[in-house]
Image (cartoon, rainbow, N blue to C red; front, side, top):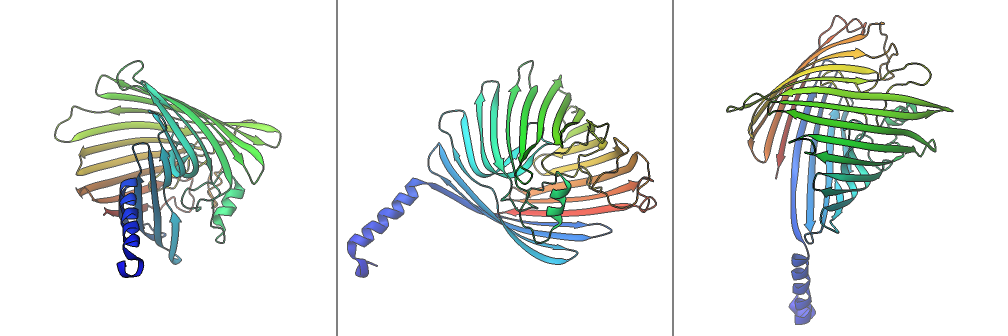
Length: 393
């Protein structure tokens, strides 16, 4: 190098390397995950390698980049899906204010409207007793399985189209406020608003108002409540929907392992009169471990028990009872069904083991006992087995 470019070139190269080293602290790594699911109707295996890089320029500016290489094997064979992972530019212009732009993780105040990875800008300002959060996101550049968005029959058709790679084109803006320790130690209140614009239909499609509260009683009980009211446009009518959750958590006195008992009731509206409709969140999530039920025209009674010996071992067993909230047959079912309101019961147990800080094993087994609502499955026992192994290097 010195012979070809001389001492001046060598000096410039050394200066460039020194500048790159001092301009940003660089960290990097890769996580490898193998997720296996088996049920009576299918076997699916997902292998994901996710390299990531983080550049910290100073105490106020950083950049994070990741990419996911997914090799999935379902009933139709192997399929390779590369996709951009969390990639965000983070700046803290003033103390307590954090702004992130790019492909970033986001969860709304209620945790049931929008939850996943989105493209856009989000920021939060922290103060003594809480924080403000504001966000604007676009969904049309996401891979359709990366954050599943199914809000209408048109969205479902787009998702089922094997030639389509991207999620439906929507824009949503949200804002929420979180207050902590106002009326006592560890209490929490959150209120939020989210409005969504459907670009394909060229209209403001949905608006949501949410309220959450968490109230500990002494040191062993925690009561929680959340409620969401949604409005949507249907021709010239305004359709109102709602969902909510009530839960009580009991934390017995800690011994070597922490026990956790929780009883939860979740409901979501179904089809009512002309001004009431089923609750439709932005992102599609399944609320059963064996029965894939989204939060739409459904109510769930859940009891769970968790024992934790942090950070090595975590065991959770969950019982769920599923009911329809109206006589409407959910759109996500296509087979022949009866008029029963009960869907059935589910039991699922999982074990999480982390023998090393960079290695985690998660195994789960569950059974679903269908009611007469599922005519073709009412005398069958449905089951699911899941094994997940994740290593971070």
